[in-house]
Structure formats: C-alpha cells, structure tokens
Length: 175
Image 1 (cartoon, one colour):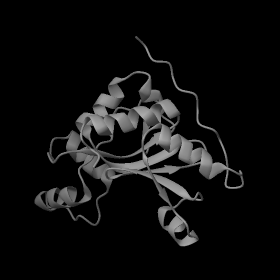
Image 2 (cartoon, rainbow, N blue to C red):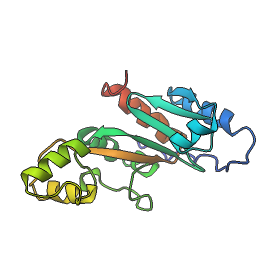
Image 3 (spheres, rainbow, N blue to C red):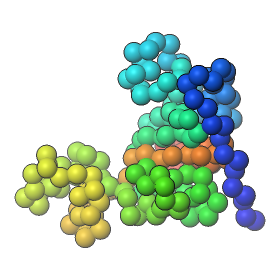
Image 4 (cartoon, rainbow, N blue to C red):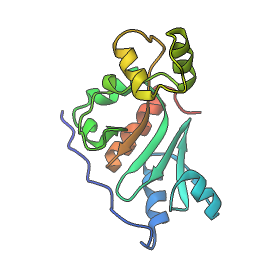
C-alpha cells in the first residue's frame, strides 16, 4: 500500500490570529508535548514568533510559517528508516538542504560536536577550524567512525509530523 503525500501545513505569519491554537492542534494530533512560551524572552531564546513549541524526548518542534523545524539528534539508522518511506521522505526533509526533496541522510549525517572534536584532534586537525560539513566529509572518507546523527529536519505536512513522532516512539527516543 502506498501512502499519499500529506496536505501541506497552513501557511501563516506572525499576524495570523489563532496561530497558537492551530499549532497546539497540530502538535496534539501527533501526540507531541506542548510547551507554552509565555514571554517574549523565551520566544526569542527558542527563536520563534509563536507562543507554543513541542517537545518529545530530546527533540524540539518549532512551527515556522508553513512547516515545523525539528531539532535533536536522530540516529542515522532511524533517519534511514524515515528516508526509506518514499512518501514520507517528501514530507520530512533533512536540514541544510531544504530545497532538495528526498535527500539521503547518509549524505548529511555527522557525529555530535563533542565526538567530532575528539576525532579532529586524533587526525591532527584544529577542532575550531573544522565544520560539520568537514565532519560529514571525513565520515564519508572513513576517517571518522563515531556514531552519526541528523540534527535537524523540516516537516511540511501533518502526516509527516505524525509519522516522525511515531518513529521517535517506536525507537524509544522519547521519555
């Protein structure tokens, strides 16, 4: 059975009335915990215009104008499982390549910053002068073998958000 691509999320800006209620409904539909950000300082800290965000395990869900940005460390094996679903890979995009649909996580996964810095030092590289992209390249070359993760996603549909949250639960990546 082939799943159809989900309907794109409502596009809205900071002036839309009722936006927090829409975000809460989207998060609840995916069974994602809701965190209220009552002050401008908290909103600025989380880099969002809206009064609510989602949390599930170590993942944070921040609503943008027409999609959710999700940050957290997704193990490469789980990222590959998401990518393996041909419909959901259109709804859930790996960070850094927002304009590229169906980007393979193998091409963008990197170790944690701490692990990468240790590996850079072992390789005689200055950890201050190397980037995440350098870590990705060195992983591809087999010079870094630390566990790899996807750090950020863009999710365009409610179906994608629901699927993503279900995958986190399936793999025990939530508390």
